[in-house]
Length: 79
Image 1 (tube, rainbow, N blue to C red):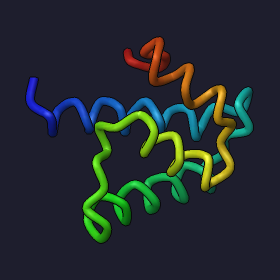
Image 2 (cartoon, rainbow, N blue to C red; image 1 turned 180 degrees about the horizontal axis):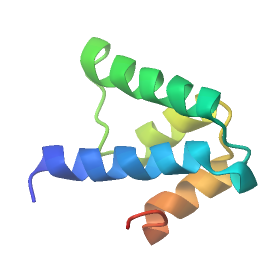
Image 3 (spheres, helix red, strand yellow; image 1 turned 90 degrees about the horizontal axis):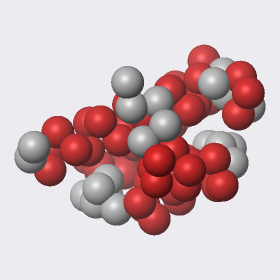
């Protein structure tokens, strides 16, 4: 897979986490995460393949750091 495909898969996983009520997710949090990811990618040219960058972005919209790292490490929500 290309780097772009990998970034899309990881972004989808983060998106699913943002919706998961068990993780404090909500539709509003999902929108905030989407906007933060788009801003980071297109306006700041940040590397969305970097787990630390993704964690920073996800926690900036209120997602739990441990949950985010778990998603990235274990492919939670990968289906």
